[in-house]
Image (tube, rainbow, N blue to C red; front, side):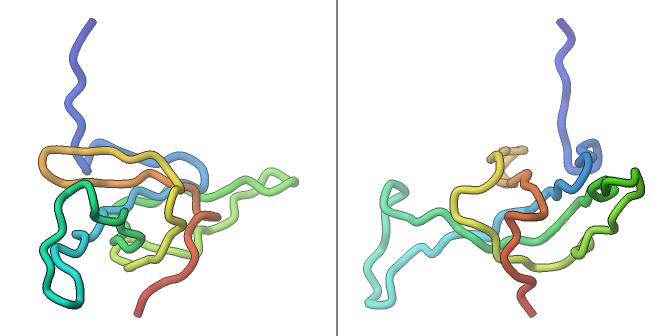
Length: 103
């Protein structure tokens, strides 16, 4: 079996899925206490790095995604599939799991 090397440029989401680069989680609390890796919460904010062509409607046409590459988004806490490429973490999720675009 051949090994496949993944990178951001080789991942193309299908349908209404988007590929999001996860923002770094907080290293310490508001009071200044350092958090170990096991106590950190899963981040819910990231930047979109790839967007699928859109969802098919009932008549067969494509619905344009509401988000685009470069948008910062807030997404559901346990949504999508976590993917690690090198040292960076990404999430592949459906557009319906995106809650808001962060300005």
